[in-house]
Image 1: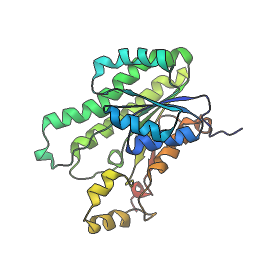
Image 2: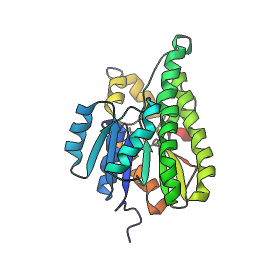
Image 3: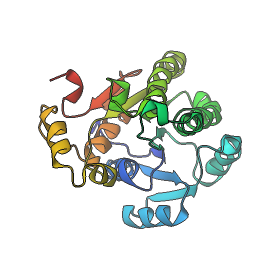
Length: 251
């Protein structure tokens, strides 16, 4: 028996068309799951599915439009069934000093990261509870583990998710539903490359604070998601797994 396999599982991944979400989808497909990716841009989702293969499909869905959550879940069940794995990965980012960060930017951050994920989870829960199984996985951030300047709104949102994970885990564990999070460190994505472009000093500073002395890959996050969603992690819930090359240990 391969305890890391996800055969006969359906994974739903928000923000699945690019970056970490797409990598999570790819790794779960390799582990045997079928995946449904969600996002706002149809062209991006179509391109991702063409690259991921025939076991991947998509729906255009904006997590911030919370009033559409129930209707979307009905459509999903009729078309694909009830997901076994839910990955909340959709997110946005704002990098500004706190005095320049507006209340609207904070509100948008919370709507995407916290409220949108909360609403979709609530809409899916009746079927998960009826089946008495499932894994809900949130993607948080190293900002939920230690302080980083210029990202106060982002930190509030990600820290809120970390608290939600603990609360949901205690509430849903008696019903056979596990809830966990992955906190990525510096991962070599397009977003990271843009952030570090023409700034070798900043990159060296990051690597000097990372015990493994390298950036992570999107697949590092993807395989961590596979592990936490697999039978190998059946006794793990309410946890936030740092996938950060050791940065969060304070080296």
